[in-house]
Picture 1 (cartoon, helix red, strand yellow):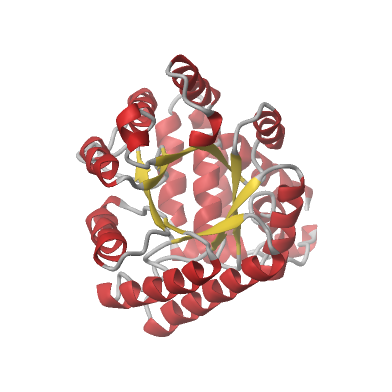
Picture 2: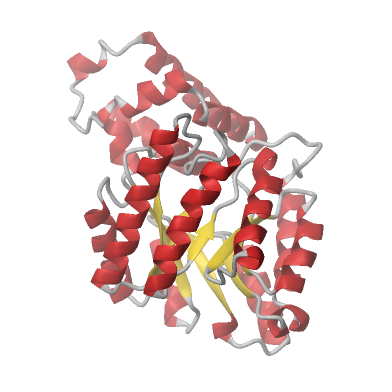
Length: 347
């Protein structure tokens, strides 16, 4: 990754693709005031673009903005951030960034890096667990490759008394993700594996029902991938309503009696307040669930929730493969995009 500042002179020598990307971003930000969905679609499309990734990751100011959301490149930087957050009363979920690898060697290298991460969590004593993506572990190459790699991670994590959460990716991988999750949890007895539910997918209502029956360890998110209206809600209001419904189901007496522990992953105050009201009305103790927020976003809110007695966990990504994650954060919050654009012209 090139973190060297780009001068005004060198910036003018950037390829036309970068200027096209910035022009599209500026146009999209202006258009956002009239159509939020259009901007989000643009940024999510760019998150999968190879040429856009090359342009952005080769441009110094992009890292200046991305570093707001990413702990660094190395495992030691990630552990240092986890230790700082723990000192503020915040728990941590660590994510070694990477996804959609195309070679088995890449998948195995990612596995080895996450094994190292588990070792360092154990050695350092930080309060953290690990989140992984199956596409990083090779599921798009061969399902058995990802299964074997995840099994190795869960075995190491279990020896340390640690947990591993499987992040949910695009809708095409949901069935495969659940199949692998069930095989390892129920077929092989790994009780230290958890999973994620995306509120914007229509199918999530049914998926939550069986997760409750199984007493799963669940992280609830709105969803950050570009999906067609045939499988996911297109309107934010519909996604918000689904998020609240699913949160209430996962906090229900039935769910808690079966051992479900819910991580409510959102920065949306309306969602946070809805969960708080439900918990208070139904006399649900604060240690029966937790709030999860992203590293670098709404830090004051994170600390405020912790000071009120809630369990708060910060999702902390690190590594060199930061571009897709960064673009999804821009898609979620256009103010981050504007910060990126203004930094380009200041550089």
